[in-house]
Image 1 (cartoon, one colour):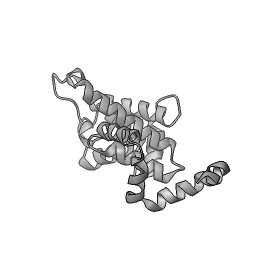
Image 2 (cartoon, rainbow, N blue to C red):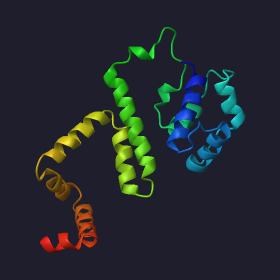
Image 3 (cartoon, one colour):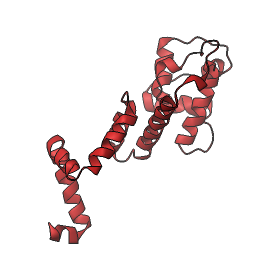
Length: 175
């Protein structure tokens, strides 16, 4: 896949993630970059990249696009001759889907900074799938989530417990 095709695909995915139900336009990408990252590329430059007129981009441009679209900078190059995405293992493709799901989830919870940041940390981890499987095992082990919470983030656990008691008076009466 060529760099321009990848950029068009990323605009499409980003539009869906942002709830547009359509690809983001080049102008929308440029404005969102400026607003969210403080730096941007022009619509004309994005058009040149997508049109193949700029098959090679600078390291700075690659880093900016990677930060905005939340992809590895190495993704933003032309694939070598003979490369096929079908050569990826099913597990590797699944990892990419998990990461995309976590990034989308983080965006959905932007009003809850702690949850958003936790989802972003999971998505950025080298093996986010394994972390989610580990989390599942932690939850299945009786008492382990509470014990870990007491050790790792006691102030958060206490605040969450207090919040739950306020929302559910009968729970507070049982404690």
